[in-house]
View 1 (tube, helix red, strand yellow):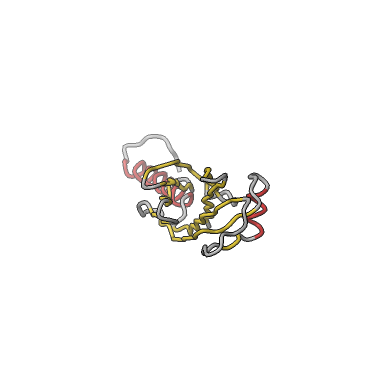
View 2 (cartoon, rainbow, N blue to C red):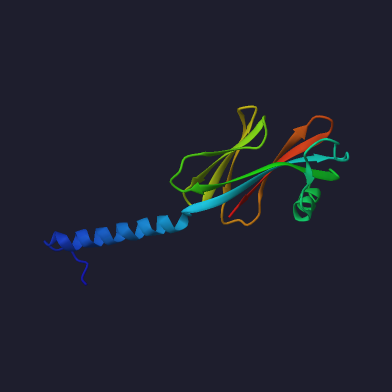
Amino acid sequence: MSLKPTNNPSRWQFLALLLTSASVLVGVASTPVETRVLAVLVWGTDEAKPTGKNLKEVDTKLRDRLANVFKWKNYFEVNRQSTSLAASAKVQCLKLSDDCSVEVKLLPENVAEVKLMGKGKPIVTRRHSLAKTDALVLAGDDKNKTAWFVVLNFN
C-alpha cells in the first residue's frame, strides 16, 4: 500500500480510522473495567484492647507491615468496607466510622484517586497506581498517643 497522497480520500479516511481505532483500544486496555477496593480502618496503640470494644487484632501480615514503619505495639481493626469500582462510574464512598470515610474513583491510566475524609472535610487526596501490588496506607495521630490508619487494597 502506497502512502503518497492521491485524489482518493477514502484511502486516507481508512488510514485515519485505523489509527484512531488503535489509540482507542490502547486506552481501553490501560484502564480496568472493574476493580475491587477494600478499605480497613485500623487503630494503633501501645495499650491492650479496651474491654467492651468491638475490635479485633489485624492479621499478622498487616501488623508486621505497620510495625516495621510505625511505633505502636498493637493494631486493632475498627471497621472494613469493600466495593467494586467501575471505570465509568463516579466516586464511591466507603464510610469507615462516624468521623472517617474515603472517596475512591478510578482514573484513566490504571490509577485510583483516594480522598480521605474526616468529619465530612477532606484531609488528604492521594493517587495510587493499580499496577502496584502493595496497599495504600494513610495515617494520622489520635488522642492519648495513639494513631489511626486507613489501609486500601485494590485488585
